[in-house]
Image 1 (tube, rainbow, N blue to C red):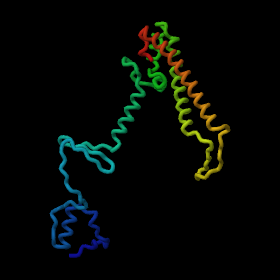
Image 2: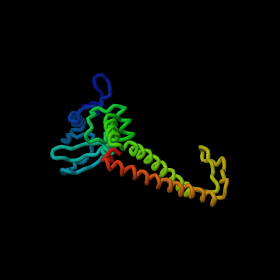
Image 3: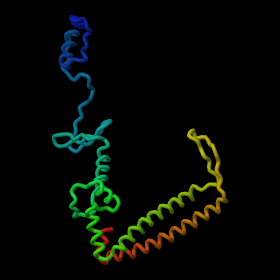
Amino acid sequence: MKLEKTKMGKEFKKKYMHPTRRKLVDMVQTGEYDKNTTIGYDKAEETRKVGDVWEDEHHKYEKKDGFIVKTGKNHEQIQEIRKYLEDKAKCKNPECKTIKKTDKDKQFIEKGGFCLNCTVDREHEIKMAGAWREYEDYKVWTRMIIFGKTKIDQYRQSLGDLKEEYDMHNGEGQVTETWKLPKPIDEVRAEINELIEYGEGEIKELEEKRNVAFEKLREVNMEHYL
């Protein structure tokens, strides 16, 4: 019996048939029948125990009691990012009553850690406690300390990268210009060290002032608003 073409004259394509019917066609053509109807798969059965975790190219699997949990390979990283973004949008006040955070609330949270309503409430309490000036000074000095420490780190990095000559390159990596230090390298190094020393002294003074402001806030039980 010949099944190469149908009555309509078109080529007979077994690959589009159900696996069981495809086996029957093979039996008619060859006279043999394979009881294994798993066509197109060459995957060995693997017994998994509860708690086993394995991966393929795109997914991670975990065997549970009676079922398998399937997640993306980057699922944990995505969850961490999602949690970070959620925490970033949360008001620091554990008793915050603002249920739906607006864009304005998020701006206040990003800037000071509290939503708009909680910011207004806490600032009112600080003013009533007579510690508003210390509160403002503490915030300003903290920003100045962070900025100063960042600049000092940049100065220290420049010391490590300091050279007498610097080559300028174009987009293809070719040297287009050579720039030389306007002063001897030892003199430039001494100036940078002087800037670092001066900056560290300024930061120390700011930290002392900030500590005084913090103590004032703590005396009136307002330090938890920082």
